[in-house]
Image (cartoon, rainbow, N blue to C red; front, side):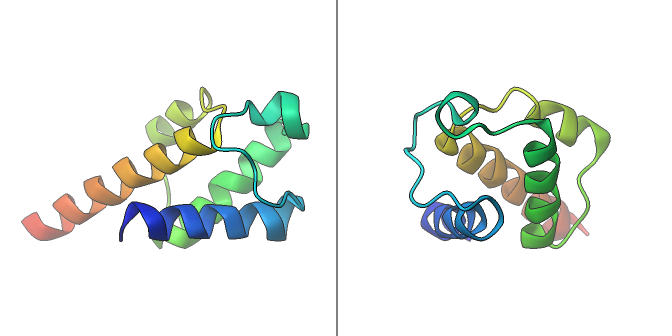
Length: 90
């Protein structure tokens, strides 16, 4: 999964779930789009679907500091790499 794949999916999630079309990559989502804690929970559920696995409590906790689209993409990229590395060692 490439960064471009992740960005495409995140943008699709924002359009489908939050009716936000083309969010700016480095804009604070809370300030610009009214993104709140309920939205964050819904986004985490969508990330789990996208990754095909449940997030751990530690992974969910790390997500609480995310404020921008780029940070979301970075976060998913790290999660995907971690899951791939774990799958390769099995």
